Length: 435
Image (tube, rainbow, N blue to C red; front, side, top):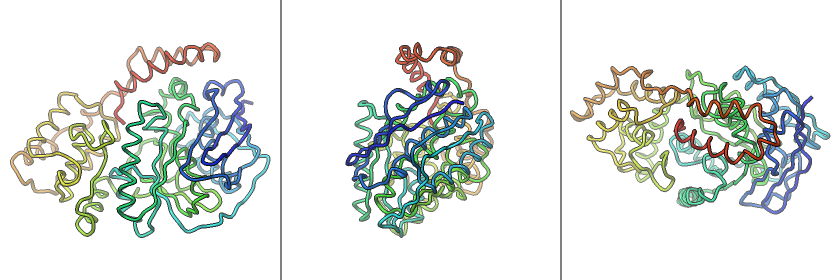
């Protein structure tokens, strides 16, 4: 049977390095480089059974896709028990997953020295800001991650610096701690090859549709253990009633746990507009200068012209706030630009964005327009068929050929062709996805 084996677990100051051996059948999904994660505080005292969680959280879903076994010399017993429920949930969500086993040489339990704190994965967008508002009395540590939407590449250094600076200011102004984690998780996983094999089974990409709930929470395990976090919150993207196969879900995140820490999928009972309502109440009562950061195009502010910026600005208006006071340039004449963006096919929207605009439309039906331009847009949105605005998710034929070829290419040959495949995949993602 195919297997992934954790060969070594090394912690040195703030850095974690794990080496993994993959047998035939799984080696094409794991690159030859070691898994690495860097934290902004020492993790030397984190036991190996917890330190191994970040790499296990990345490779377990890959193994489950192949019905394979993952072997590790040691693992936190609570985490090992928790991932059984995560595996069941993901296998029910994605019928192409076959399941598999986690086999540990030792299962150990640990008691962190300090406990009682909490952490929140935080970007400053609508979802994580709403979770901050809900849990602000806990003074949660705000945790920002680099390795997924912000890659480890030098080309993303400026984005990462902007995010760090913005989150640090937000935390300092509220006397909170901020924590920053960097990882090569989507270089360590051969994400283009995972796409080549499984893109046809999922609505988005591998990590968004399958891996990121377990992957991101698990990445935080050494940080949470070293910092005494009893609770780790992951803001929900979707809400009750949205039936999408997505890698972060209550049935996944709520089951992830390790010694000293429980993870929570937060805010799933609230729609995106209801989260904006919570933020609006917080603004009115506490923080009139609060800015949100949601842009698809930049990290040092909002462009105010992409679909997500417009969607957020209109949501803020519907929540009773002026978008221009909270990070967005928006006036009545922008309603025409929004409508044209849909009708001219400027934006490539997925099913999840369709649900978000339906959520806005539900609020529009309850709202009296304040101007002729707003009234015209509300009338259009009430009557438009949102299903017609969702783009065909089928990738171009050339990219399907590339993926089909990658699936049958011998791994040594594929390794030599990887740079070309990665470049082609990058072009495809830019053309077909705004997630």
